[in-house]
Amino acid sequence: MSDSLEITGYSESEAIGQTPRLLASGQHDSAFYASMWHQLAADGHWQGEISNRRKSGELYPSWLTINAVRNKANLTTHFVAVFADISSLKHAQARLDYQAHHDPLTGL
Image 1 (tube, one colour):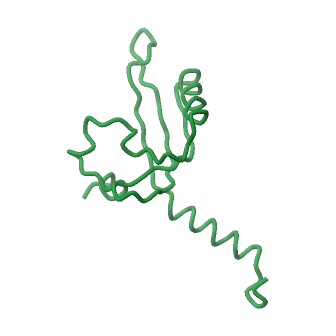
Image 2 (cartoon, rainbow, N blue to C red; image 1 turned 45 degrees about the horizontal axis):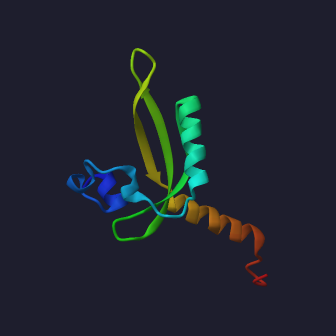
């Protein structure tokens, strides 16, 4: 089983030919995407946390890195994106935050 199938729930045949909107969560507004595209145009790359949606409908946090691919004339021809499910990291951070701010003896 490929990592993408495990993360998204979509098979390779379901994902090929689709746009990244396939995973859109609806959690980000147009200003978020405008900022992302602005940085991609200016710097040729963007990375950050984004909320995606699995085929099942479940939301999950992911770390997304996008790089512009340029031709010999330095014009962007396409983009390459790599993402990782960071659910486990977010759960661990929340657990550590809770432990740092709550007393197990008193529950406060």
